[in-house]
Image (cartoon, rainbow, N blue to C red; front, top):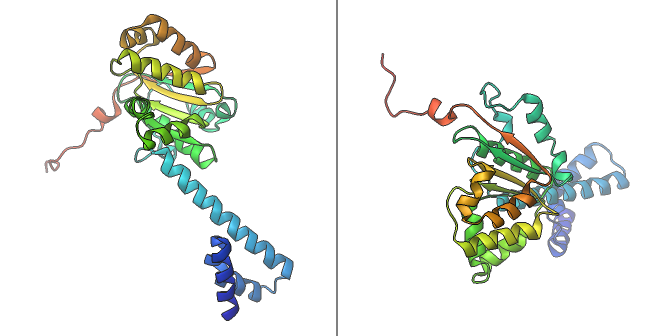
Length: 251
């Protein structure tokens, strides 16, 4: 055990946390299985690699800022919203992220746009992509403050290097002209190297009204729709159909 502690001290010095955390179990396993020196050394590297991969995943997951319940394994295929199981599986394989394609999820409120977008963002995070989930309001606030606060500046730098950005509820509310221009400039900066998932309940033709600028709306759509799959979700609101009640069921 003295040798184990000595190894832990060295690990602490060189920041090899995965080995330090697991050294006792690794030594016991090596002794019980009569591992060779080479096999034991490999097990040390495997432990450190796994530890670092898990920590990196936790960092990506925290930065993604996903909503609660973003696991598409729980997706209810019994809900009729116009998305087939085949299309669902094709979206989850994420080949379109590698190809830098965009997704535009359109449809009325409650048809699963946000859940699907967040779930795909979670899949991308687990797959090793730098993926982030943000509402339109959060994007606008970041752009408004990026030259003022360090937090917003760091957020802008982070999103500028993203593999995937989800923008939830785009064009839900009107935008001031200067913020609309800032948003266009941001999209224009990253769209060639970043995939977007856009959720919206407005048709692209309505974006000009929200921006109060047809030229700007056309230029924005030109970049987002150039390499884009538009998925139209339909049906009744899942939340309304499955609303909760505070009253107990009548006997």
